[in-house]
Length: 353
Image (cartoon, rainbow, N blue to C red; front, side, top):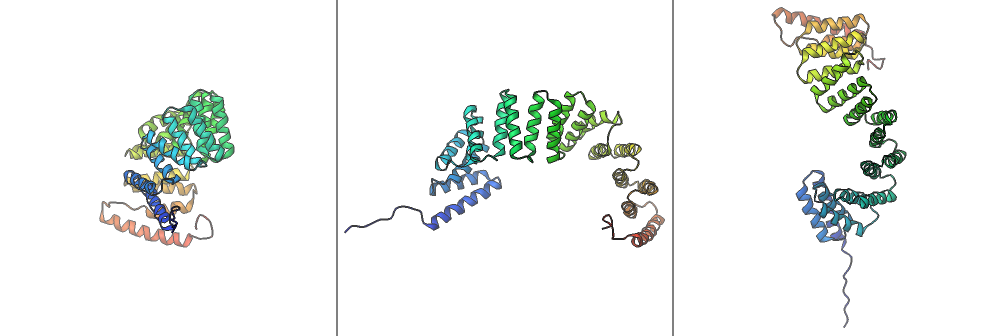
């Protein structure tokens, strides 16, 4: 008698088990539990050696762990199983770059773009390679293609600005950086490079301003103050310049200096509500309640954002009372002013709401 045996596709329960393990591995990767994730991915591949995504994820894990030879082997296996993965070719390019195989890396990135023309990181890696090789025109062309593909990707504008700066196309570089800042406001890297561009243009005040903002965003307050001082000496700062400089001093617990900066800002921008409010808050933080109330009254006289200053006035109470009668004075003042404010507040304007 002849018997037939079935050796073939895995059962649904086996497939479910494999996918469950793979999902667990991805969760471990997400939580940066690298060793456990590696073991879990290897377990997946023991059960299903042709699991392309597990190979890809294992290769990525090896790459981030700087185990480039192992990464290359895993990615090659993944692409052997499924060559249509743009991410696989892109990751292959990253690994080959690390191994010094630049020409093959270029081919890998080009293949990623061929599969998915919107794979923006592949464009930027290609541009970086050509830029490093000194082929600035080729790099510029690639970055411009990246912008056409994804016009809202800030990184392509940043890279374009950098390569334009290398070619001494300073005004074009500044335009590219400005667009990058529109897409990612206050980014410290863009601001720093903008500073480099203005320095190359010999506009040292704009350079100092952008360097200052960059250092401020990085929390390098001493360096920021050093740059801001150059701007302060020319009296050319805008409202947010004075606020940023004062915030640097406050971050270094130099509150008296911050108060001086706010006061300087008000000399140039006497109707700036935001500088007034920051000055009032800083004075209150220092326990200078009478001075803060004086600033509120000054703002009243200028009719600046009346509701905001009314609210500020109500909350300006001393942290420590020197005399018992002060407690009664401020209590009565608070109750009386709050009643007046309640009667005067209408919820029929965007500000009031």
